[in-house]
Image 1 (cartoon, rainbow, N blue to C red):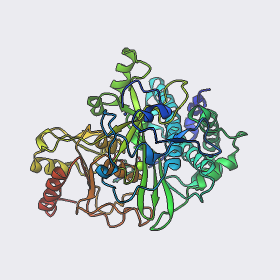
Image 2: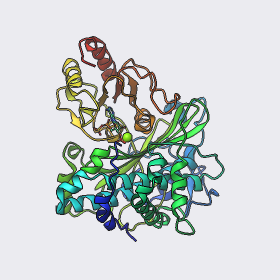
Image 3: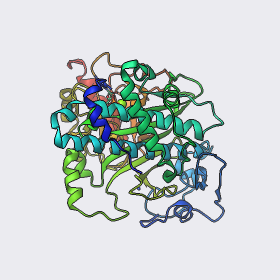
Image 4: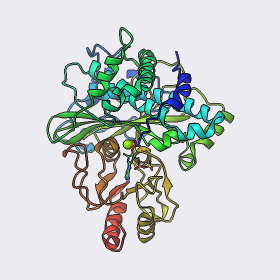
Amino acid sequence: MTLNCANLAARVPRILELRRRRCSPNLVGGAGFFSCLLPSTHKTHHHSNPLLLHCSITKRKQSHSLSSSSSSSVMEDPKDLGFSSQDPEDYSNELEVAVRAVQIACFLCQKVQESLISKATTTHVQAKDDNSPVTVADWSVQATVSWILSESLVSRNLSIVAEEDVQTLSKADKADLLEAVVQTVNECLAEAPRFGIKAPGITLGTSEVLEAISRCNSTGGPSGRFWTLDPVDGTLGFVRGDQYAVALSLIEDGEVVLGVLGCPNYPMRKEWLGYHHRYHRIISKLTPSTSESWDKGCVIYAQRGTGKAWMQPLLQGHKQFVWPNHARPVQVSSIDNPALATFCEPVEKANSDHSFTAGLAHSVGLRKQPLRVYSMVKYAAIARGDAEVFMKFARSGYKEKIWDHAAGVLIIQEAGGVVTDAGGQPLDFSKGMYLEGLDRGIIACAGANLHDKIIKAVDASWNSSSL
Ligand SMILES: Nc1ncnc2c1ncn2[C@@H]1O[C@H](COP(=O)(O)OS(=O)(=O)O)[C@@H](OP(=O)(O)O)[C@H]1O
Ligand SMILES: [Mg+2]
């Protein structure tokens, strides 16, 4: 079954809602992958999560956190991983559910984006200008992820901070939009068993979908456990057929403990990150892909304190998802010479001051042209080692939202990178929906050397900036 988005196009004129809104290759998956990295004493256990199908998890403490960070299958001593005194808490169940949910969300987004692009070939201006499919994707991902988390993590009182609120969708004049969302959610969840998640017993009705969306009404805070979700980060990239991300994180007592980033259009070759995604699509059509080719699209994820970040490809075709889906570790780049470093920043100059960052780049000796990429894919690029620096300096008064950064920050940190505000302080996810107290801007680097240089450059040039 595929998502039928055809009727979205018919509704486009009536939907006025605009939104501002990689152990070895040839792995066989499942425990097989990790057993090559683990001593025989490391066991696989079956958990009792009622919603996970075919689910055989190698406990995270025994697998991801102990396995090699390179392609070597040599065991590492936990002491070498920087968390010798205490193992990280076991979030294996939450992590696996979150990764599966993001895989499903990426599947949903790809279908909606394909539909949007194909409409653009016939009615170019209308599709370009109409944000309704984006709105459908946002609401549908939020409902779908919320439903999966609440059904899968039944023992927990689920709390989610997410970008969309339910009021807009509940209005009488949004009936068409709501109907499209309900249909998209049901078509997507019907595919859930392929991802190892049980589909709902019956078709979800409007009230169930609205309930799933409205469940994401947490405002975060300093204590307890909550999830953050940005269903489609990089709205403009999504509309334009370019880069975007699905971002899910788990925050506990103000600290990000899990980060999962779905990047459906992340190209196999990093060189293509700088091109409009349209070129990649053309090249993909001209080049036959092999079954395990990392054609495009990945889910990248990390757990706090493990010193590891992982990447797996998006589930291709009609395959069955088998955890951990050929996951391989990723690490930040070792480049610390600014002249060799790649620096990335938001595409939209309204979101970050390009002239200020150009001045910083010049003063620290970053010589390459900036890589402008939509969304949290920039965080993924740093964690994968495809770029070394990410800077964002929003206009004065703009308050950064936690769902736009939480997953990416943790993934870069666990991949070996550094992320702080421009004052060198960690981003604070404990103050509610916003990164309250953020000093000037966000600086993420592959290493401390680059990071120090940029922090100093900011201090030297801030007073003469227009920010
Ligand atoms: N004025 C302004 N300043 C700074 N940031 C803003 C601003 N407006 C929006 N946003 C948020 O930026 C998110 C988009 O990601 P980026 O900041 O990386 O920008 S870009 O997409 O590359 O242009 C974007 O996320 P989405 O809304 O999910 O697309 C916003 O949360
Ligand atoms: Mg966003």
